[in-house]
Image (cartoon, rainbow, N blue to C red):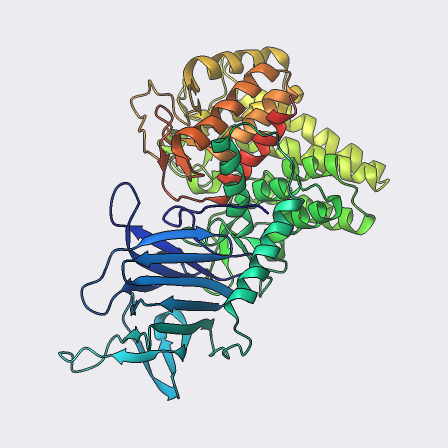
Length: 575
């Protein structure tokens, strides 16, 4: 039994496969009391996925305590308690003992009617959402705002009858969802506990460290488990979102780290399937010319115009180190990576000098890195480094397929790209980012992005690696890990996104490259500092972290941060 206490003001409460999630708003800094629960739907845009606000009491809202485990959320006041659990992908069950509840729509343009005995149906126009309430025990009432000539928003009140209230809420896209007939709180929550325990049992065994670290590890696995949604639409397989509260979509590099975390399962068949499912996610949308979307969510948005860095060859190479792939799988991945590589070399090299460029920072994943301050279309050194890795992976796949001609072709392409990278971007002391066409550049860049060729490990000449590592240790390494901007830089901002904070992806890519390059002691130092920061200082898997204090910034419960924590913990444990 994997007992896990969840602070749902940090990690939203959900379950594997569900589109629904719950989070809580603290009423005090200590987060011992709360005053609102939020109901989220993961298929809606991040800025609009909070659909409903739930309050306790029909008059002045009451504060409540909140406890959550993987099967259910329980809130309490002096008047009673209420339990919430997610029965299926789009069904929330509320079982109250003594608490009256109010559920307010967060946005306008929701209207509904009593559809039958104790049944209420609503339509939320801007969000294509069709909520249905069924009051199994108690009383439900639609609240209207009498001062409005036209009803722009209707809320719901639920009262206990004889101290009991039992409500089923379905939140479905496009059309109403039928109310399940087999609602049984004890049976349903027992099934959820079983599902969670089976998943946790499959995950990699890690050494017991201390109670705080062990609890954080279990919570991190829960973070990953509960962030999956079921296959639907352009999610061809069960897919891990970045979060079900914030950033409830998939981005075309985040998924690689989640794939690698899933690969650490003790069950190799399960590990390979889940890892490959996550790896393949963006390639379903790959265009004929090879580009991947920046991000996507199946019912609201696919963002083209920007993309993400080509770390996919690096990722699949690591998966090949762990698993056997059959001929069909290898041919499929070869086609994906070939098109993806040629997108950059053919269609994203503005001045045709053999060094591709990012149109702007978002394409690199480092949205506001100082390397992009000077201009658009910048030839940053990470891009050819990732492509070198990807070309070598293509060569490796071709060898597995007994295609010696293409194996040699991609090996030669990788060597030629490495030569061009050094000739074009190495100034004798460090790599620089050059504006495409003019090749203007800053001789002493202050962004960690200029250090990313270290991902190449022993593919990079030793004299270059040694100089980069010296700069890395002197200018970027803090007591918490690798800052994305030199803390001594005039541009450093402790909460500046990619202009200072520590991020999971840059950390893991560099740790992996340092290990492969022979700098194992530094790699282990960075890994341990990142894990200690996440667990002991930030106490959460945030989107990014203050490089000097370790404080967590931005989206909490972010899955690539959770995945990198588990990867580094697992790899560090084996040392």
